[in-house]
Image (tube, rainbow over all chains, first blue to last red; front, side, top):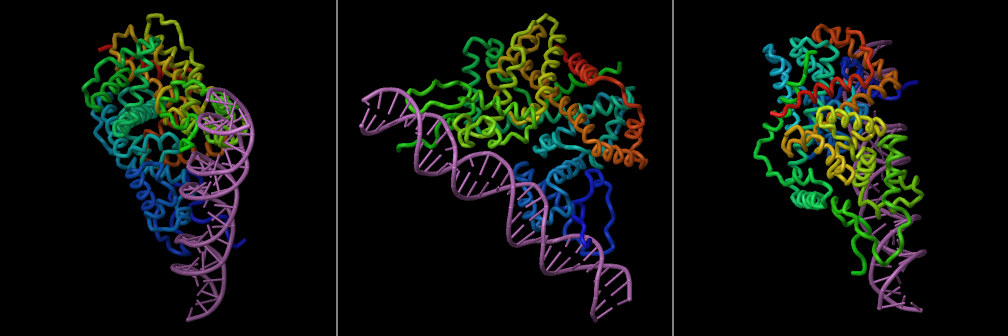
Length: 238
Length: 238
DNA sequence: TCTATTCTCGTACAACGTACTGGAATGAAG
DNA sequence: CTTCATTCCAGTACGTTGTACGAGAATAGA
């Protein structure tokens, strides 16, 4: 058999992907790079949303043929994982562990939120993510270190990290959804009318009260901070 | 103009969808129903996952032509919303508010988790959901009532509901992902090897410790309960 | 019976992910 | 330099998706 069933990275498993294999000694030299392709996909998602990230669009942005991408990532889902780990690299890998683990953890959550606001597609992409890449692992390492003074066992610390990430992702999803609702004002108005109609039916007194309450004048940061405090100050060492 | 640009429900906004309009006095009688189509989509998702829910597959299950579905839902995303509200109807709409709001809230979270385990596609579907339907609103109403003794203002109670739902969804996603990993054992083993390799590189001492710790012998329910306690007992009235 | 209305659904199309494959580039071997 | 295995590039093509279009069937008021 003169030919393998595929070339490049297409045959590696989802984890071998991260264990970089060295360049082969023979054969044509790669014209692009996984890094460049990933960066193009990220900037595309930043600019036009996750649904704009198609193999064709990414290839066009890189200046490559569509099928060339498959030499660098075996499929689109893998490209998404690469994107996630790419932006995870923006998270500070080393930070001061002050010893006040609750405060440190809040800091970390704020960094995660900032990252997700910078890349609004990230929460959605995280939902289907499988294996953490090196940048995500470096960040995890830091979070585990920050949590060490808590006295919690290692497994629990990992779970807390996962839950914190999910929490932040959920919150940011909500935040950005509300933003989107306000610039497509027609939709928002229709939704408000619908909710008002439901509230007026007499069967939803609690909802009616919530809608009647004056909108609070707080920044999104403050709201996030309040929920974060509730979550983290509830974390118990027992 | 003898013809509107569309027929049936296709012209209603995403909220008018829920405000049922009565049957027109003229014209052909509908052969199916939104209810039946939604139920078919739900059972399909239950059996084969959310990605198996294609318009063609749903139509086949209903016994209708593909395009007939568009008389009952303007597009696929709307069908997803209908599915979400459909299963939301399985949540008990009336429950005993014991006055112990923390305990009641934990009960509610357990009910949500049970629902999501019964419909594993639900967390993913919730992520893109826009407007709550009548069943979701009835449930919200109940949660708000349960939270009344907490003294929190209405807006905060709504936010807590949203966060709790996101928390449960995140947790269940994790739970079912681990299940899936265990029946595609090859993947799981490869991932374990990858993580072990990373842990062995010396730069991830915390991760190494987490992996070295013996796997805890606890039920998923117990783990969920622990996290839930942390989250809810941290909720403060201040 | 006519006609306006409403629903059904076959056909068709654009966009997607990606399998296939032949050709171009490269480095080692002779 | 030539030869050749190896590796990568990318055009073409296929199957699947959501859904626009529009002709025909059913229904009810005139």
